[in-house]
Structure formats: C-alpha cells, structure tokens
Length: 607
Image 1 (tube, rainbow, N blue to C red):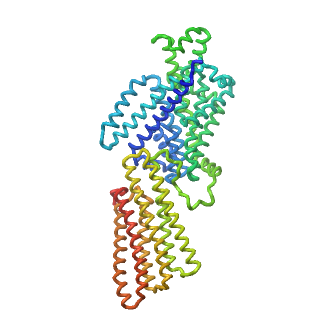
Image 2 (image 1 turned 120 degrees about the vertical axis):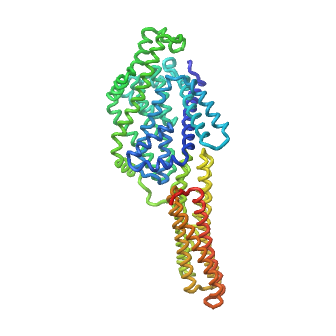
Image 3 (image 1 turned 135 degrees about the vertical axis):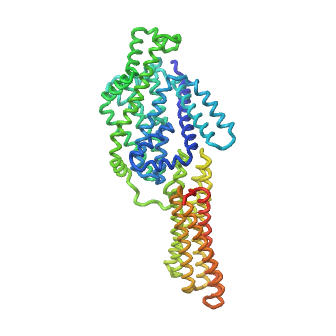
C-alpha cells in the first residue's frame, strides 16, 4: 500500500494548517476592525434583511461561517440581539461561506500557490516585526499571514489526500456504497456531515471534496452530497460554544442547526434534478460539464490503462495533451461545486428568510426557558464562549450593567433597613438579605474579573485591552458601593448595641441624602446600559449630582455640632448619624469614580 501512516499525518497537518490559517486571518481582521465590528453587527440587525446582509458580509470577510455563527451566539448570549435577529444573521452566514468556495475554485487550481504565498508571508513578516509602533499594520500583517497559511494548507491537502484509485483498500467500505443510487447520496451526505463535525470547518471539507472530485476519485453528484452534508456538520461549532451559555445562546445554535437541517432535507428530496440543474448552469456559463472528468478518467482506465497509470504516478511530461484535458475538466468540477454550494444556499435563504418567526417558535418549544434562574450565576457571560475574544467584551459590558443594577437594589434595601423596627425579625431578615447580596456582589466581581482576564489573554486590539482595564476598574468601584451598603447595616448594629435612638430630623436628612445617592446611582446605571454612547451631557449631570452630595454632606456635618449643642439629639446619636452620612458620601465617590472611567474610555464627544 502506497499511502502510509506518515502520509495520513501529513494530511492531518495540512488540514490543521488550513484551519489555523482561517483562525489567524479571522483574528487579524477582528483586531484591525476592533470595536467597530461589534457596533456594525448590533446596528445592522434591525430587520431580517439587514441581518441577512450582515451575516453574509461578515462571513465573507472572516472566511468562516463557524466563526461568524459563534459570534452571533455570543451576541445573543450577551443580549445584544434578539433570537429573530440572530436567525437572519445565521442565514446570511450560510451564504457568506460560499465566498470561500469561490476563492478556492478561482485560485486554488489556476494560480501557483507558492507564487504569491511566500511574497505574502514576507510582507506579513515586515508588518509584524519591522513596524515597532502598535498600529493596525500589525493586524493587517496577521491577516495576510493567515490568508497565506490557508492556501498553503490547501496546497498540502492536495499533496497528502489519499489516492482512492491507487489505494482502494483504504476506502473499501465507501467504495462499496458508491453505486447504490439514492442510498449512496444519503451515505455520502452523512460522511460530509461527520467529516465536518470532526474538523469543525465546512470550508476545509469543501476543499478536500473539491480536490478528490477534481482528480476523478468520486463522481460529481457524490461530491455535491458531501458538500450538502457539510452544511449540517458545520453547526457543531456554535452548538459546542453555546453549551455553557444561557438559554438564548442555546436557542440561537439550535436555530442554526434546524435551518441547515431543513435546507438539506428539501434539497435531498429533489437532489438529482437539482444537481443536473447546477451541471447545466456550469455548462451555460462556459465552464464545461462537471460530470465529464469522472467519465473521462474511468474511460481512460478501461481503454488505456498504461496512460492511466502514468497519469496518476505523475510521470507524464509537462504539456502532455492528457494533462491539459484533465486541467480543463478540473476547472469545470471546481466551478460546478461552487455553483452548487452557492445555488443551494441562495435558494435555501430565499425560502427560509420568510419563516424566521416559525424558527423562533420552534427553538423556543425545543428549548424552553427555565422558570427560575440561579441568582448566583452570571446572566450574560460564561466559560464556553471565548472563541471571538474581541467580541466577548460586549458580554462583559452587559454583565457589568446587571451587576450595577443588583448593587443598586442594595441601596434601597439599606435605606429600608434604617426605617425597619430594630431588634425585630423583619430587621434581622432584611439585614441577612443585605449580607447575602454583598456576598453575591463579591462573587460577581471575581467572576467578571476572571472572565475579563481570560479575554485579555487572547488576541486583542489595543482598544480592546484599554476597555478591559477600564471595566476591571468599574467592577471594583461597584463592589465598593456594595460594601458601603453593608456598612450601613454594621453601623445600625452598633447603634442598636448602644441603645441609641434617632429622631425625625435625622431620619429626614438621611432620606434626603439617599435621594441624592440613588439619583446618582441611576444616572450611572443608565450610562452603563448604553456604554457605547456615553455623552458629555450625561457626564456633566453626574458631576453636578456629586457636588450636591458633597455640599449636603458638608451642610449636615456643620449642622450636626449645632444640633448636639442645642440638645436636638444625643452626642452618640450624632456619631452614628454622621457615620451613615459619611458612608453615603463615599458611595457617591465610588459612583463618580465609575463616571470618571466612563469619561476617559467610553465618552463620545457629543452633547
């Protein structure tokens, strides 16, 4: 047997280089685009058709439907787009992935790979190593080297893919099922599904199929079946990514699976006429009959076995007429598969785009929402969705808003605690609730910080790194606000132990201070909810509220001495009173620290 285990390892390495090239190219593009890529996705999904176009363009750019659908799952998980919007983007991603097929068809067999790959790598190295400044040039260099690796992998796949004609025993099982008519179509569809699930890339499966078919190893219709199966297999990546996500993320990945599954089912129902239509279409545009290659090679083996053997042991001289004929037929096959892949996805999207609401209802039925969410678990971020680091920042931004809202409720609980009857069951219950919230706050801070640190370990743009540093500072300040709320409870405990009473004047002033602090907190949360559009006006309003808090604190501090001297309340009551006011003023300081961070890192220069 000519095909050795070393050749098999070479094939695995070639597929790995192909996949790694797509990964590096995708990450380089994300870093070059930076935060704008997130904004484009969130803006361009306002209706199903814009979402469709967005998915198509993003996938065409990053050369991977798996990567783009994982991004979509991440956005749904982060609450940046609805399930219906995500379905439109996923449908567009299926069309966008055909762009890779056309690149392979147009360049994979017509252009000498080494003729442009090595110069491209040379340029990429210059951009990556010679340019010392942190600029987009480095990211472009990363994109170029990923693009070069992709085609190097493609070239090596062509070299190491097993020769079914010379090694029939290796694929004896498949060969036995290659002439069973409809059963063969179903079997090879399943094979395409399994291969894509294993290597997690429909583009890599397409590349392998294209090479096998172009060399006459399998018929054109079975190659189409492999491509059809790969459309289902590619859904495994977002499914794996959503396993540790929330219900919305799981629904988005399930919607992707259903979309590709139903598309494959209708295509299988009319498979033969649909393949014949694409064969005719390939001939109509002047690329020849894609079925001719297999027939030509088979006939050559029967009529001229000596020439056939020379053809596949690469011993024919360059320029031989047979080689020229084979080259023309290879182009016909490559175009035929690309046309089949494109036509299938275009027809599928044209039908399914009108059924978006039906898909939403189906996935909601298949994956029902939980009746209760674990209050200790984070809502938007999780450990499994780290495939698109630059885009995962949006999830952390959403989680920080939830964090701030939870701590905001603690401010209300602390004020209620002040007015609750002391030494009673209600007081103890409410104090325990505040303590529980503070404990949850500590855990949320740690989990969000851990997630952000994991993002920072990935491949980030400079802008992304600055945002992570800013968000780490924000969650620290929010946790300090929670500490202040618990601090109120501790002050009240000391007050109870000292048997000190507050009068109505003290309660009234504390409530007024709470009004200022609560207003400042609400302003902060509003800015966190729309963190991409923090305006100068909202910042000025927050700074004015901080001055009101400080001025009122100063006013109460001055009046406290006079009130004690005037016997309005006891000296010790004045101490606990001022402790509470000081605690609330520090809460305002932590809030304004968050505002300062938003000003320095997120503020849009707008009114």
